[in-house]
Amino acid sequence: MPLVDYKAKYLDLKTKYQETVDLAWRLGFEQGAQQAQLDQVQQQQQQADQMAQAANGQPQPGQPGEEGEQPGVPGQEQPGQPQSQNPNGDELDQHISKLEGMLGKSEIDSFQLQDLKKTLNDIRSLQVQINLSKSMESIKNTKMGKLNKSMSLSPKTQANLPEPAKKALSMQEKIVGDVFAKWAKDESQAATDITSILNIDGITKK
Amino acid sequence: MHGITSHSKDQIKRVVEDLFDKTALRLLGPIPKLHHKKITLLGFAEGITLATLFVQAMNNRWLNNTEQDVITGILGGAFGYIEALKSKTSNAISERIDGLAREARIAKETIPESKLNEVIQEELGKAKSGMERIAASEATKTRNLGSLMDITRKAAETGETDPTVCFLVVKDNVTCKECIKIHLMPDGVTPRLFKLSELKGGYHVRGEDFPSVLLLHPHCRCTMIMVPQGYGFDKSGYLTFIGIGHDELEKQRAA
Image (cartoon, rainbow over all chains, first blue to last red):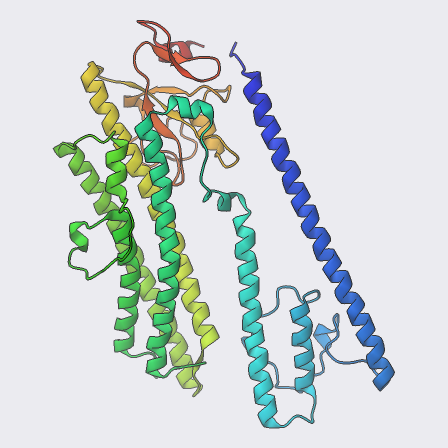
């Protein structure tokens, strides 16, 4: 019959339990914060609604929940525009909706219209970047993301591993980590270089 | 209708080449195939490369001809993978931008910078994950082939023709189930023993019962060690001297 090391099992279970509690707490906290933000946004919208109705006697364009029925002149859709990942809740989305609403108004002249369209495009690309950086941050919290953190050897592994092997193991982590820390820097430089090559060629616009 | 000029394509290729060559130089060191490249790396880095890792895994021994040949093969193989990824990335970026430029010229417009950045970021992102896979798997392979060479030398010194080995698992919240299943006994504590001749020489295929000297997956942190004659594991999995003539492998397989 195989011998079972109950102490090791207990410690293992304890670590797992602590990690689960930590994770649950963090998720709960994040959800709570998100909900609070949503509530606040809704409240602000209700207030804005009331004020707008009092002033005009009719609803304002670009209200949340009316994304599909925005007042826009036909042909003013922006083809290829990145779509928002969170169309109902985000504050940035509300500003975009407002801008879209302004674009629909007839009193704006063509110069202002172009300017507004450009601003709207910029905001949308900014929104994509923000969402991307948020996603990158959340990837860091996943299991694969945690692989990059420096590892700690258990006392048993410490005792069983010969010293050169321990050094080799940490060296392996260092090599891979260093290569990618520097890759990130070089990558952004390469992207800039490619863009400037094409700028010189005259086929891009800012 | 034309896209980007051939001169721009060449320049893009050169930018991508620089990115990959710098990374190759950092990972592999100044190997002969990189000698003709004009790359300068500035900084105070210690210059730890795969060759350094191999020597470290070999217990800092002086390499004989066979061992030098092994590390040359590893570096050559890794360089081949990097070169293949480099040309794939370079072609993909050029082709996609060429397509965008053609579309833009047909529409008598210019390419919006946001669209261009999106294409570049996507292709460089793919390249990064490819490089990560290459670096992680080649580093794992190098470390374990170094350990294998070290074990072979130790076995020759002690007169063992087929040494007994085991894999020490780094156990934490990211340890994979395959490593636990293959490298540990069912108690999840004691390392499983193998004869060196039983190990696979190529990359591991999930579901196989015997491990590989190249380990089980790219980010594998398990380490192969030799279990000398007379040594075994106690209840907690610590390697200890049991007695002269003790055969831990036989004991494990009899249980």
